[in-house]
Image (cartoon, rainbow, N blue to C red; front, side):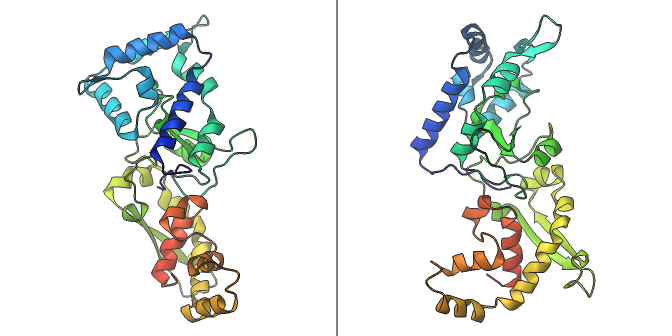
Amino acid sequence: MIPINFITKDEDYKRSVVDLFYKKIVENCNLRYIKNIDTWCKSNLNISNRIFSFEDVIKATPPELILIKNHIEQNKIPMCSLYKHSLSGNKYCYIIDNLYNKKVPRLFIVDSLNITVCPYCNRNFVSSSKDRTLCQLDHFVNKYEFPILAVSFYNLIPVCSSCNHRKGTQDFSISPHDLELITNNLIQFSYHISGFDFLFDYKQLYIDLDYSNQIAANVEGLHLEEIYQIHADLVQELIKKSYIYNELYIQDILHNYSYLFDSQEELERVLFGNYLTESNFAKRPLAKLTYDICKELGAV
């Protein structure tokens, strides 16, 4: 689980992004529908002496989303009134079928969040081309069970298609939007050797995941321990590189090619093929795995 980072940490910028997102969602909408949804919110979402409007719901922070979800569950507030039947007889929810499916600015979300790698698995790129996103949006809180949260900014997680399909409607314990998320405190990668020829046969290496109970639902729901085994060849490469790129060799490169690198950290990224600090895990796939293995090998 990798935290989602905005282009800047500035809180005013973040608020401006969410404000603009709200405007994009409701512009040119059927005002009667929006008014009805807003009335539903104000009638049902009176939480801790605060009444949430529909705008408040769309802009709700990650803790507020969970607060709303728990309030609905604990008070058994029915969602059925948000669904209607169309002329064809099919169930229709304006929030999902119109606002989410037709109005959510997917490209705007991905670009605003400055996200390039799936925050759930850290294995696949999620990015955008000039006019479309090359990823999917997962609802951290299931949109069908809680349709009122279907277009909440912080409920939308840009992820790879593999993670989106694997997660489905499962409940995860931690959102990548969680401001308190510290990846290195939640999950660690390691490896063990099952045969003598591991340097030549990567199938004799097994990747281990050690993770806290706090993130267990995420790891187990995505079957991360299973799917990460495909990357045993990367672990093999890192083991070999750790023999070659020892500290003496690294210092020698820095001395002879100082004009190429701003720091030892940059050189290590070039040598080991990935970013090796937590703040940069979201920039390249498998950065967390690479960091943990390199650290275990004493390479960084």
